[in-house]
Length: 393
Image (cartoon, rainbow, N blue to C red; front, side, top):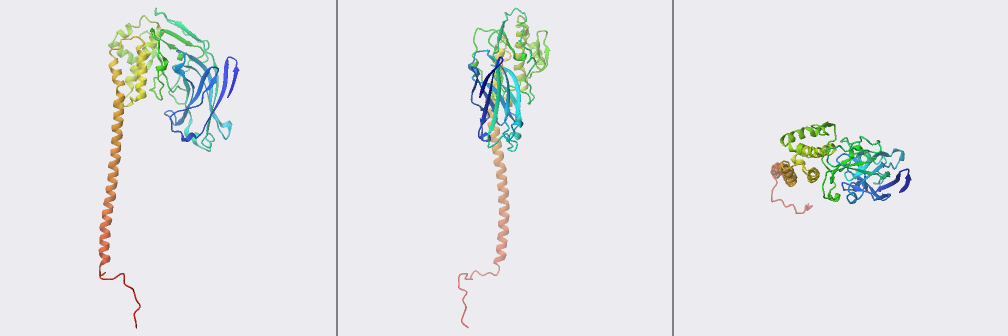
């Protein structure tokens, strides 16, 4: 492990050797911790793929829930799966990201095909050993907090550099995406992460209580919330296009949703209605069968985030609570389906055994007839145990 200063950055190379790679039955594997400055990092992989038939590899900030609220750290890094036959054929992918409480890991869901990784002739897996290397450069990130007094003036975001402006996670497997994403606002502030993508700015709602980020759980798999084209919503701000029809519908039913936000800043309004749009989109696009434990926890996080924006949500809460309670129903449905499949399998086995029995009964009847024919003229008084003898002549 190498650690050196590079300009404003502290750079380090960490190499992780994974023994008995193919014998791992866990969904995720974590490397040992390594330090860059006072920050703990580790590599996270999904050896069987993160819902894809690819090796998924991420860089993760360790103990993110124990860090100060609204922490952030900008890093430029590369992840490499080492080719043990020819290092020139190693696969390396580069990224840069502003790590924060919402995205404490970042990397590549589709790093390389599992078929290529597991082909011993390719050189990536030798003697059931896989080697992954991380080259990480970390720079201290200034956090600028702009107070928004709720007077209606728009807060401005002023990143110190533009190198990452516009960078967004994508649903396309080949680009780097966070494998978990949660957001828990706590005060009406606008936070600009310098050197981090502008799309990752966090806008927070006023409250007198402190939200402990350690209460926010990390998820293996979360429903995807779209990041797409922005459109104007009633002159209040830019909202994702996919949310607009849903927001128009509920605002026509409940005008107070718009009225209660008019004295807020434009930035705050955009985030408030984005939070509402996320919940509506989840309820609109998620089926009952999809309400697994992870999905329920994700909806709970979206709901808690939405509640911080002080909408009157009495009309929506019953639908959310009903959805959250579907976990037991889905689990029971899964159990019933499993029992039904077991019963179907037993019925098939019974039919197979009955068919074999029918064939055996036919064979038995044939054997009986053959025996009857063979016994014709064969006396029962024949002593089969007597000596043959040779007689006296």
